[in-house]
Length: 272
Ligand SMILES: [Zn+2]
Image (tube, rainbow, N blue to C red; front, side):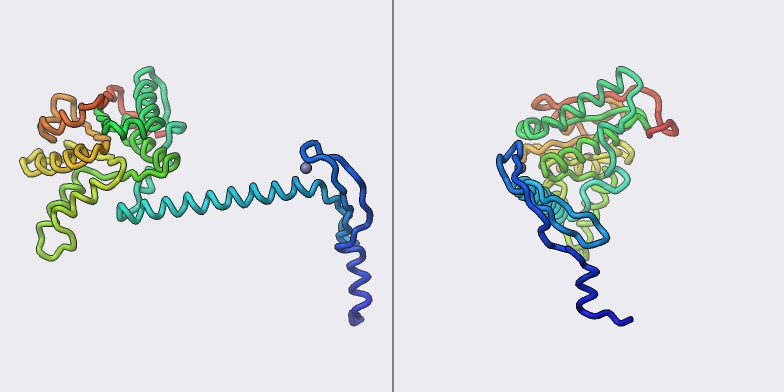
């Protein structure tokens, strides 16, 4: 049977119609009229509830959506400023919450890094850096990138993670005649972020050239009062060989902290 206009209307029944209304009192907004609205034959009619409550819910949903858009735009502008994704995907989920702590030393290292992240604006104002030194697999990169992720998310600041090797390659390539960046621009890239995480210091050969690059890098950030987190598998006494004494001095100035990761490698254990 073909549907006619009249039997479609009858199938819709009371859809959208106000069936009845009652005076009620909202605990937040006082007296209001509650309307019972039909939703057709298939579904039961619904009460509208307090109109001001509904309006507030809509406004709150709009506000959350707006904040999300602003945060996303901020993140994108940071990423375009530093020219790449700030923290590599494999470290982007590293937080303090998912750092496994099973000894007092690990707890202390995590607490220092967490405090540094949570009070980053104050530390940054003084150009205060961190050095995380110790064995492979002890969670240094995890905690450093947790600091980076925290300041990106909580303060909308720019954090850039690089290895010492990639910095040296980047500066070296600026000497080639056909590269897009010159030496000054090469350093500018690493001087721009609010926090630079410099990993794998001491993996390279400790040449004079590499010490010079490390000095230029750390010094340009030091002069701009921008902190750096230096990560190395080398010990406190070996670090000057790879970075030079002046760099280590710069990193220790203004209360820069040295954190030693002295425990065994946790790799292969759950959570690492
Ligand atoms: Zn209400």
